[in-house]
Amino acid sequence: RTVFFNGQFIPEGEAKVSIFDRGYLFADAVYEVVSVLDRKLIDFAGHMGRLARSLAEMSMPPTYHDEQWLELLRALIDRNNLNEGLIYLQISRGNPGDRSFYWPSAETAPTILAFTQNMALLDNPAASAGLSVVTLPDLRWGRADIKTTQLLYASMMKMEAKAAGADDAWLERDGLITEGTSQNAHIVNSEGVLLSHQLDRNILHGITRAAMLSLAGGMNIRYEQRAFTVAEAETAREAFVTSASTFVMPVTSINGKAIGGGKPGPVAGELRRAYIDWAM
Ligand code: PDD
Image 1 (cartoon, rainbow, N blue to C red):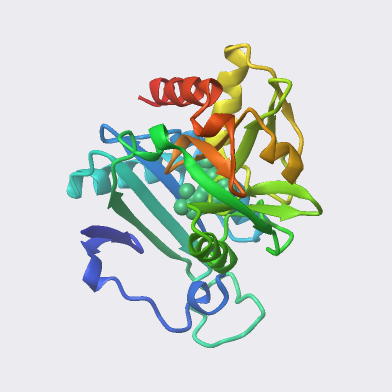
Image 2 (cartoon, rainbow, N blue to C red):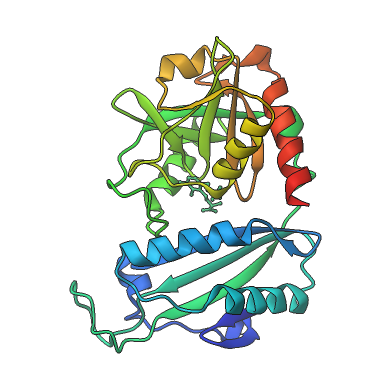
């Protein structure tokens, strides 16, 4: 692969990061994952908006303008012949030349990288089979709304879910589902209302979630932005997740209990189709 690294397009093996880089020592870095369909970046503006917010929340200066990002990510897609898959981009606070908890002065240049991942996003078998999830405690820090590379807990919970025989985990805080390990979580409750956790510091403000809710509004699907309990999830008519890498993906089992008779539900199916139509 050709990757983008600190202003240059270079072979992946030539990109080297200092051991003092704060991304490496402190997870002091923010990132975005943008999906690519037919060589086109999906919801680019949405991802750039969140990137700017993450940087601001971390008191990191802006890097490139959106137009510059667009140009360089398109160049990366071309160089790697990426038809369908993901673009990962990351900005760390950089290499201050030593380890210190305190942020370095503004002169320390950020480390900026982007790479492509080839992936079949449309033709995902989970779209027809549905995912199984188990609920596990949400013990992440209180700023899940900032998209940092501090992903160890998500990684641990994915492993725990896998060990329990499930595809993934939904995280629970004070009896309420916050979100998935790397997706936003949604249900259609027993009254037929789509429930999605409100935007606060306990969840990542998903770009796919926002597009999905806007499409749901246009399709006259009733929705409320509020947290739901584990019990509400287990007895829901439908459940699904959203993320850049899964789009809208049905969940058909929660804690071993079949959701919607163990089959992907109609609302999730319609929203998946609507999202893909809108994205293409
Ligand atoms: N994850 N919640 C969490 C904790 C996430 O990590 C993600 C995305 C989402 C969905 O956000 P969006 O719709 O903007 O992708 C929700 C990405 C895909 C990842 O880390 O690979």
